[in-house]
Image (tube, rainbow, N blue to C red; front, side, top):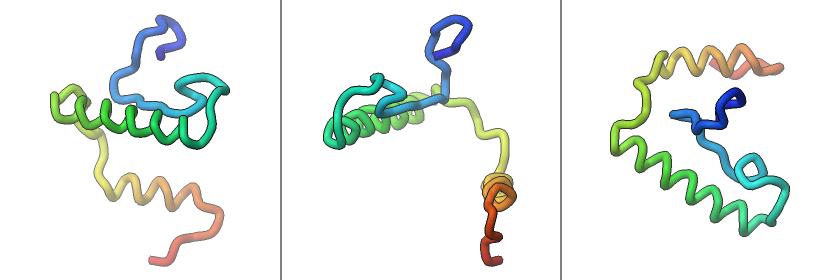
Amino acid sequence: MAPDTGDAVTGAYVTGWIKRGPTGFIGTNKSCARETVRTLVDDFNARRLPAPEGSPGDLDRLLRSRREVPLPA
């Protein structure tokens, strides 16, 4: 949810305690995750997601820059 309006944020998906608050256990979190993935797939199939802004290479560079131990090339 957007902090200023409380509206859902397109392209942002959460599960577990972030979604429901501090309740439940592993089984609850698994079913919650399945529900979130179904929503993500439905949004993708309905073309409700924004186009990616970067490339897979951009993500790889970002992840490598944030690791304490460099990944092998």
